[in-house]
Length: 543
Image (cartoon, rainbow, N blue to C red; front, side):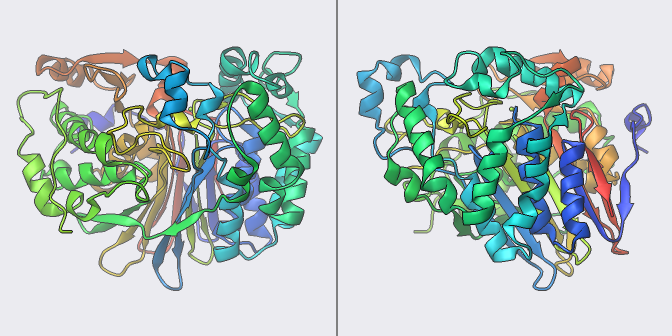
């Protein structure tokens, strides 16, 4: 009996359906996806429609000026395909450039125009539809265009973070005030219009990716980057391409868990799951100190590897098969002290044989799309190509400035990427088990592990799994502090502290630190069960 769970009450039920579910962080984006499903569109069509609507309704997290990744489950072939829609650094940007500007010693400021990488989202949307979609981009983008043109009431949590972004980025970034109302964020319930974004989407609907990477939108992007002091060329945009890749996976107690390969950090979650498979988590209470300790320690080991090995595979050799082997997990598992926290885990040496939005859609045909799109750090740089209604991302901030690091900044290189979707199938028949994800920087692989364990080891429904309080290791801080969300049992917190975990507690709006997830599970009776994170404004909606 999971006694710790009995003290935690979900604030809403999971959603059940046989015809399709869309789960996003904004009700209007969920509605956009459902509108496309109701017109006969499939999971890919609905995912892009929802992503575009999220650009309108939650520009604090996502947009066409950012990147995207997707995993797609085809119900006919039972195959999972992976799309990398992330952009590359400018061909004109080098470590020498940063050295001349005195950035190597102190680091690159997070909103500097040098952090702008080519926005990959638009090409990714178009490529996903070309390969898996069934409707035209005109139909797919029409709900988002309508929202941007006619205006929409801003949701409460979004309004709060919009206000933070207005102060942090938009008020000082070039053209940033175009995404404000007289320099301030819209209030909850206040109508916001984005005519510029509607214009962008109309052009993309008409001319597809060419409209974004060549022509007036591209000219505006290059112009504003140069005006801000950055470097990017017309060719950087015109030559951008997405890549279809083989997803990576591990088996976790009879489930095949899929992630996109590096340069994304999905491998972090898979390494941790491999380590945790050697423990009987199902026998432990969901929020017990014993289980939390094992999960935290497994994540520390996984991040120790990821911080070195996650890089652009076009520039660095990554021993993925070895990192994901059960043999390697067995060796790494031995480093976990069951009675004491180990704060400073080091990366292993496998020997090679040679703020983001996440959404999930499963359609009535059985196809699933696990989809993530992000600006990074909220509004990204906050820089807006004049008149086009979207900000430019700052993904380049994730490059290492150490020339000897596999993730070192280099021209036309993709950075370590935090955004990751996940897909899970049953080993027994390759049927869909779940399409899910948890957004939020370095919280994402931690969220993937915690939510999947709640579903599989704890046998919870999607909404209950998302409602559970979480932990988050501060990967970017020295000392490895662990944030614990309000709702975690006091005895668990006390016990974690006693065995050496540097714990601090987080509540209120700061709970955004723990990510915002969406889960759609398909049970053995082919019934879809959806949940949406209570840490955001959204919901799971069904046909």
